[in-house]
Length: 246
Image (cartoon, rainbow, N blue to C red; front, side, top):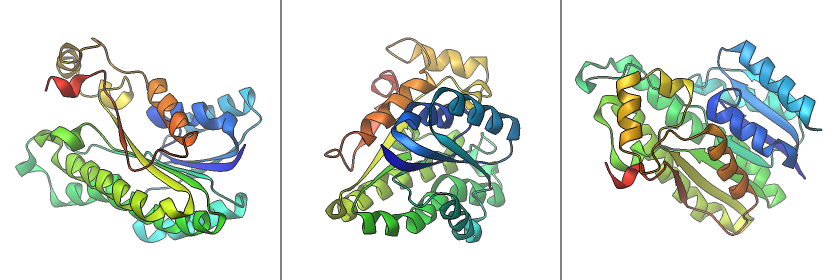
């Protein structure tokens, strides 16, 4: 059993599904969330009532890049070691014409979807190097592969996450630290639902499997990557084959 996993955006949607999937493998889960305290408490209760894993919750806005070090210090005051880091938190701001997106929205999108991943990893990796063991999983997107102008800042950020993943995998493998990405397609979450029926119908019609993905299907891939010490530098696409048709 691993000591502790840190999951950003870990109390809703894909993040919660990952947390539930990997909880039995870890003594502790450290779940970072932004503002939905009700969902955070529900996730903590669900996991602790069905496993022996202790759940710690941290309310934090990952766009506050200069405060991430303080977040890490607080986490280390609760748990002594992070064995697994899952950079899952993500946000789509102001979808639509990229020319109309404000500079502040673009900056916030890049900060949350990419820069926070790099900064948080920077503060977690030294301890993994010391232990000569670690698992890092970064949530990317199929948009990082085929692009999507209506969510351009999100697309650019997720593409950068994929590049970061391969670069760190090459650097950290010597310490028995694996770094992989998961690129979900259209998964049945609140974020997907907010896109509206027209977009959802299009997503299903262009997916060979013929449905939206389930969050727990992404969770199973995360669990698999944690259990796989010889897989690193990869991007695991979980999209029902949609990328083959668009």
